[in-house]
Image 1 (cartoon, rainbow, N blue to C red):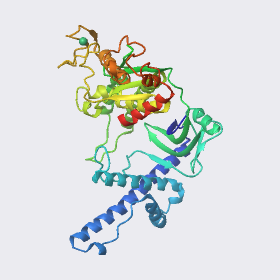
Image 2: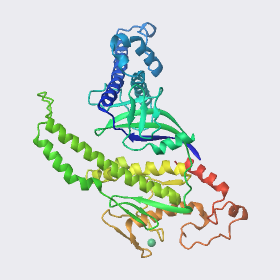
Image 3: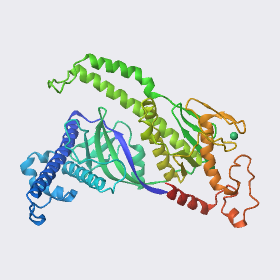
Image 4: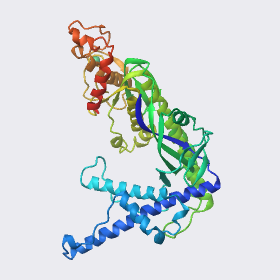
Length: 453
Ligand SMILES: [Zn+2]
């Protein structure tokens, strides 16, 4: 039983009236964001200008606070003047925009002061008309309707869902889930609601808790497991490419927008663009389904999953490989394996980025100096092993953890005796030598995972 924060997303089928109400709320969110940003920029510019006149620090225009709380306070004081129509939308819409702004400014400050990991974050920019539509509700009457086919949203009302909300509803009725917030968004021509839920999950333990599986991710086949199983790459993007090209040619024949001459796109061009968007959304959906199926199956079967620390961002910089790698969704698969493993109490070992999983022989441990990407079969010069390249890599990954679990006999992963005579009685009692983890050893394995990640 673990308590986690999880999102449940449902596609919506709003009525025409609800569609415009949703749009209005998202527009209100954007309006409040831009209003707050303008206020802060004016203040920053004013202070910067004053500083050039050598005005001492204590006589400068006082800074405007960036916290979501003070932004909201400022908005409530000025909303009658700047937005006399504010009562048309839920107050949550404006709070949502201001909270987003506070988060964006916080990210920028954290990034410039080096306190934030990842890529550098720029100063927030104004949201234009084309920016994504979204709006978050954190207080008020939102949640599931009793019939399991509708959701309640403040001011917008009861909206029909495209699919049943049964899975979340059961948790809510049982009292194992609490809905914290609801975010509506418009993606690929369709409205969605995502509930952020604090949920107590009871995931089944893996069917083979002692099993260690190495997963080699690739482009030729989506994944090769050390058990010998090959999960083929479904190549959804390549299959759809033909249709995508046809639609893009069709769009090129139609009158698109022109910024220079301010020409508006034609209705026919817009129709083709909508078709392209829908096709991309369909590809995303089938890909995501395949990845979820695989990641769930891995954590439901094996007690330990070993994956590589792939530099996906670096690999997509290779122009020849980029589309194929992006089409697989490797980074997403790793993300899914990692979070699902914590839910099910499965140990995930991430191999070092520089570990030569492909170049090492899985039988004798010899490391080849060079192995071209075109060589699909691994041939060992030392022991004569001939094995599929990816299967060899997957076996090496699995051996990494088996090694750790039975350190004195490193390398001898095949036909290993059930018990190690050299081990002391105490060591055998914890279950490492017999390969049967005792109750205490799961706790130890969890702790090891925490230090490894
Ligand atoms: Zn060998």
